[in-house]
Length: 394
Image: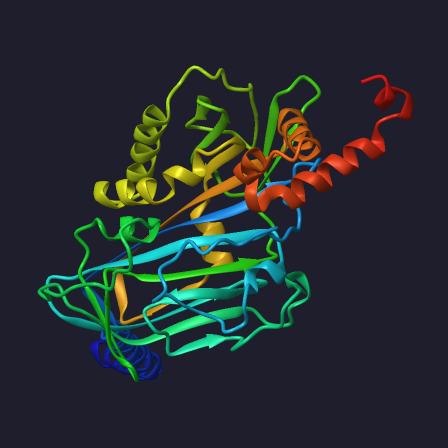
């Protein structure tokens, strides 16, 4: 092939590929520009950590039952905002009480963010600081949340993250679990409202939902607890806890399988030992040590109260699906650690409550407080299934 023919063929090939190559080059430039545009909404200096609790009650089949508290004591300071409907949460029937999620922000310099959280099959009932929007604005009382047409949500706009701010956070009285969550090194926050500026160490919110749990925990005939994962996501840790008076015990499983059977705990341990173990688990999940300590201090008197319960780390994938979170600009890192609390209504609990009811023992009944309704419902189901002759012989 002579030189003239080679040049002709090369020119034809270049003309053939010039347009596709040009198109690919333009596409690459567009993608690069798009990535830069997305990057403009990412704050590389911002880190967000969140923790909270999902509280539920296991029925006889191990799945979470729908329930509503018999009573809802005021356990929050008066400055915390809530729906205007009195005793709202008493009338909301669902499977999950989402309690005290707090969201911490860390940044070396001042920043401004907007935050939005939705709650699958649920509503947000309490919050602080003041939110730009809470939907639905005022839900109906005595509603079964499984019948909700839209998910609830809360949005804060223009939250100022101020690491160098010095100021006093609101406080009413001296004893309230709410204040324990402030014991961290997170940056203070400022939110401007029509009533003036509000300051806090975190964003706080609570709610109620009819969403299913990521696991079930069924009692076996020989007194053990069979725990089964339902979400397909790995459950990082399980703790079976029991308290009878001053005697406490727990079983800790750090690497549970999809189906794990836990023996009942021997009541020979201490709350201090469990608190230390739980703090270590929370740190392993991504919380800072002071955050883990703040979380345990916040809920120590509730998690370790009378009765039996399964305490577990909620899979992150489940948290994100039930409680989708949007922050703008997006932090470089978001850590979300939720502890699940699943009340186990054991035969010992049923017997204690029934005895207390018969003797009008209000002190004992108050130990079970808001869980009395599901405990009594499970007791009625048990009696309905027990042959009459056996009941009368007891």
